[in-house]
Figure (cartoon, each protein chain N blue to C red):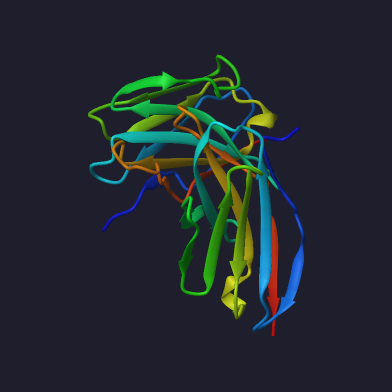
Length: 110
Length: 115
């Protein structure tokens, strides 16, 4: 079983749509959670950290459910520029390295 | 401010040759990480530096891989006797050790092709 699991997609949505991505993680000792985005042939860029109480940054909302070991990302009013691969990322326990999901591919269509 | 930089951006080498990849982290970031991303796959952790020490080398795939860091700044990843399966993008990231959530910031990567 993968340590961080995501639906690979692809998700193809029209501009203006709301889209949600889900992610589950296996290590209950995980402490920090993130969403990164990765454009084709580019490095991952931090989109947002995910806090226990959930957090929002403009059109993006992240939620964490520790009991279910589940993380979500909601994108509202999607833009063409949101097209990318979204990576669910976990920092497990005392380890410093990040563990990455394989990513969910999003294409926003005009 | 300046982000993480890596060089070279692309490297093509022949099987059996040694390569060195360089990473300059964000100034003041005490933690530095190397990851590898094979084509169409997720990121795999290789090694982590805290200052100039490497407390976690658990991701290095074989003894052909080594890394060092000097001056709590620049890091070099060396791959000896390269094999075709080493072809990947090698990504470096840095973070502030005191950061509560360990947000890591990535460089643009070195795309290594072993012929």
